[in-house]
Image 1 (cartoon, rainbow over the protein chains, first blue to last red):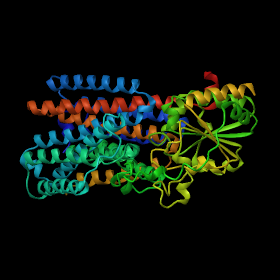
Image 2 (cartoon, each protein chain N blue to C red; image 1 turned 135 degrees about the horizontal axis):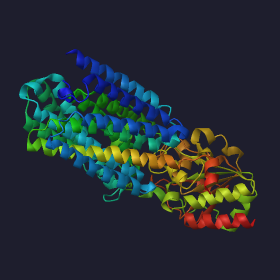
Image 3 (cartoon, chains in turn purple, green; image 1 turned 120 degrees about the vertical axis):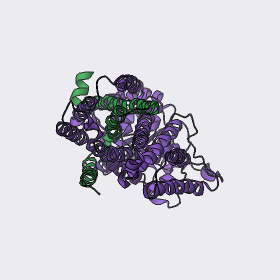
Image 4 (cartoon, chains in turn blue, yellow; image 1 turned 30 degrees about the horizontal axis):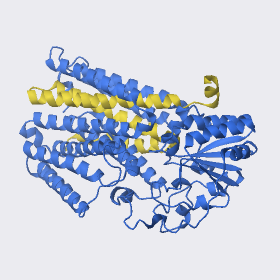
Length: 473
Length: 100
């Protein structure tokens, strides 16, 4: 079974033990992520384990083989491309970066399975487990690859972030899926065929594209997490095909954890995974009546000077950052404001909604980049009871995550989403460019709350003015 | 079914439980690095890509293996580097003050 053991610079037993150690480092790496203190070291340990596993797998090739050259060149090219893009990418572009890395992983898993299927004689392909895991690896890997490409294009705005839908879309996708299943059953139970495997590959690529197209840009992170899990499973399936346990462990860890994370993410939005994947949320409603009836409501707006003085004389301030903060490149200005307030003896913390930013935990990364200590970043469940003792809540570039209609209005598209209790604080300062609603296209009653003061303008400019006002107060 | 398959199945099932168990302890503030870090781990497919490359005996197998090696390497190197870059930024209050 184990083709790696065919030549032996390192004995099969030793190889298996080294792979086992590598698998343990992967688990330690994920375990390290339970705290920011140990996270970086954990990631380093997993990277070392990975490097060792790759190096020992190289010793299994005959040194004169031309394949060695191809491998070295391939690794060289891949390492340069991977490292350069990982170094250069802006933190705001992290979701599409993860999508891209995930896509190539899925593509690699599918390619490995195809290559192994072609290599095996007809007799070898006929083994049920080999056929089944090959089919799974190719189908899941290809869906993950194509889906990631579309997710990347949407997030990079090469494609519109608005769901692309047409009549009967789910039926067409269902038929493609049935086609894939039909070929899979044939290949596993009836006979072998390289042409059929090719058809399966093409159908899976089409399905990957077709299934991500109708999902809105704002839901893309959930899709990426799901595709991440898919790639993990495809890799695990390749492990079965090749008889390699470290592939099974690595792939399954990601498959299981990715599935779990996907569920946590849709829970954080108060929606089911089915709703995220199939409801095409984010498509503008045809009636366009979303903003009707709001013109007669009044809002109170304030100047940076007045608000700065108010902030400087409060004792407790919570900042609620949203993706708008990152778009305006205002993380540093927010941190400066927090430091200026702390210099005046004000207690400042940041309330981070689980889906703030463009992927879960994204806002934390963006604030960490601006040198905000992570002790100041507080999760929703931890801070939600503190809002009622808070003098001022400053909402910067966020909207839906503080929208009280998520609690009370069953007709609202965001109904059921857990929100930050910003409305319970004594005063709310809502920093916004205009009165436009958030991505979900929902009006936010918090803006009309008598306790709310609107501060219109670019988030960065406004924050800089607030810093000056606080320092002068 | 031979015993090797049963062994693989055992490994698969236990790994799934370990994966869920480990992830459930990760705080939301680290969910983005978690996604990119676990993303790097499925780059282990590079070991598989090298294995099929080692057995390549036809030009088509060479081409497929070569593509798989490049894609898998981008996955593994990019994944670990970008995760490290993010995690490096998470600092305590003391560390950020020393950094000013």
